[in-house]
Image (cartoon, rainbow, N blue to C red; front, side, top):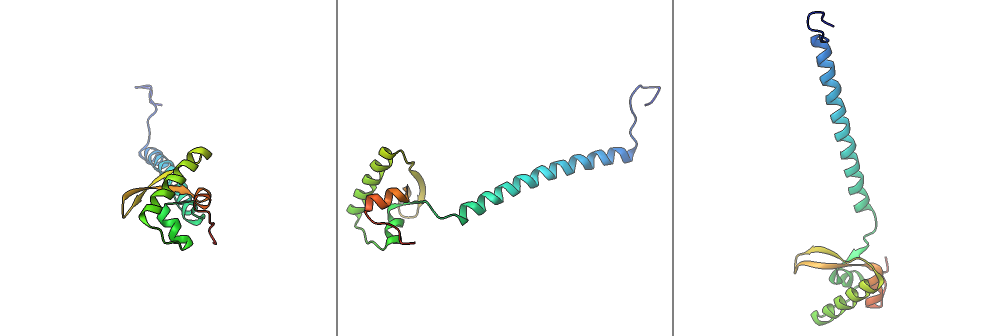
Length: 117
């Protein structure tokens, strides 16, 4: 401590070490955040897909749907999801812009057929 000012005087090396410690702390926090994001992405793509659009599900089970049947199934799946309290997700769709995506258990019940995978 400097007797003239009453403050602690830092040597240049002490200040550099303090800055480096702060930088290491920030980098460590950033690395932890990135690790969490990577884990989330890995989990998202490694787990079995649970939600499908009507068209995706029909393709998955090998069904050829007319547009009328597709609309009817969409209504059934929506009603069934509401009754059972299962969420309906909105996803991007090349054909429609956006489309409803239903849990596979709802689609199995609405279409009366399960997934063979």
